[in-house]
Length: 178
Image (tube, rainbow, N blue to C red; front, side, top):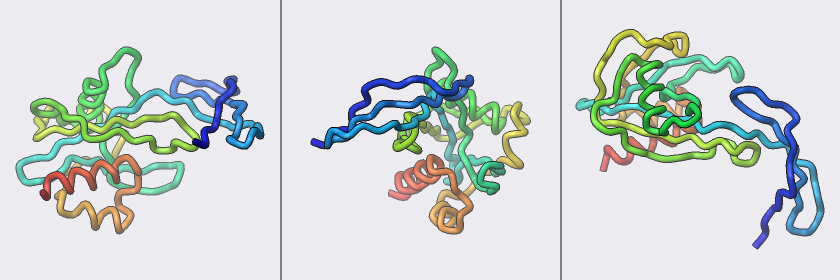
């Protein structure tokens, strides 16, 4: 089995959201190389599907790639916070909607596992209750219920670009179509 071995790492940069480390990595053939990696806190995402088979999404701009797209509500899990609680909190803060009933785990993805240890935990609920205007309304241009049947076309047209959202929406589309 070809396994890369991490013989130790040290931090070269750190802030509240991430740590950039430099690792001494041994390749399967015995060679060593310096490998940068990003250590990140877990991220929780949440959405809901309503009785009309529509999914709650955010339409937002991402300044780094300078692109617009549909995304799920998401945020960093606070220290000691339960993943489901973090997902529900983020959904309410970013959309103004609270999940109805229990949140269900949909999937966990590693969005950039060649560079980062980030894990994104996606949850969903059958329905949501509108509480009011989102506390974090700066996170998105608008919030909308989007038909699940439109998901494959939205992905193909590039209107869903975030890898974690693409994976979650395609899986929800599949689950609800069966």
